[in-house]
Length: 433
Image (tube, rainbow, N blue to C red; front, side):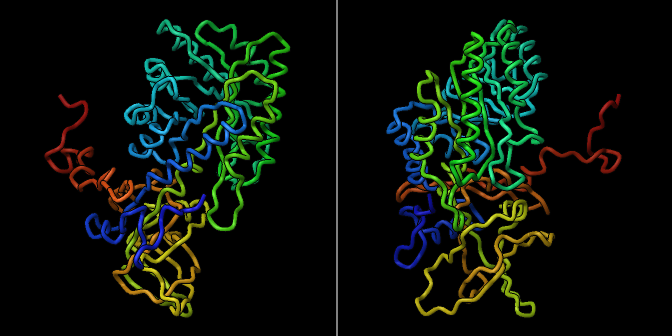
């Protein structure tokens, strides 16, 4: 899965049929842009893979990767459900048109209020991560005269071989229940009056580029299914989570069809509902970040391109040392002189580097760069650090485009704040008579 939705036409980079130069002129930089065709192609690759493997599955999009309503809606209309990790993501999935019975609620720290919302919504299942969560959910469900559909998320102690900060399936990670403990808790859960136990769930991390870690983890979970059924306990569903990686640089991740075939193999002979939760693999290649060069700066032999996007807009390089491909918006001339450059933002942090040592032609202020494979964990992880505005998101279909989420105004940004009246004489004090 590459950023093939973004290609040069007549010497300038387009998102599908839309010239990004035109969008930049109307919207201003920086901005994110998403291509609906790439979203559809990525989803279809998973759907075809499971169909070919003869293993029907609910493909529940991992909303945390990109919570733009247009993105969720495009995937939902293709057939996707939603994997959510907060009450806010439940509301976003519903607002984008995802049916409640296709929503899976994951996450290690669900609150009582979020549980009540999910129960009132009628979601497909809660992926429960601890005994304490299970017992609270039982109480909340009984108070509402309901039964909460539950899968216990197990921790299989499998190292996914990915970045330490996005590994979730090892002992010592905060996620899931130790596999041995989960079997005993599963038996207990079947006796709780507010709980309807459905099965098991597992998720071992993100940006996984080999099948072997998945196979090890999934094998341990399917063995657990056999052990539970051997005790006479019902197991109707398995949620295999997400984590399939994409090619940012030189990775060779498995194709969705190979991933589906592996799941079909490890679940052979088991009558189970299957859920998978791809996030990055559905949206990364559908998105790009467009930014303008503000200054070209030299320091010894080093060349810096200071751009108007920053780590608050795309934090992955600063947070994970992540690599994103970078292209000039105008196609490079065949004889262009290339040289290394660091692409840096205006935020007052030394870590505000979006890309290092990229081979680029001579650049001038005002020219545009496009940071690719930015559809996952980009705008959704953005902040207003340095009092910078959140940037807009543009959605493209063919030759049509629209602003899917606009840039907020300054007044909107500060509307939730109040200066105390003892400082300004105009604010309101809590507890004042």
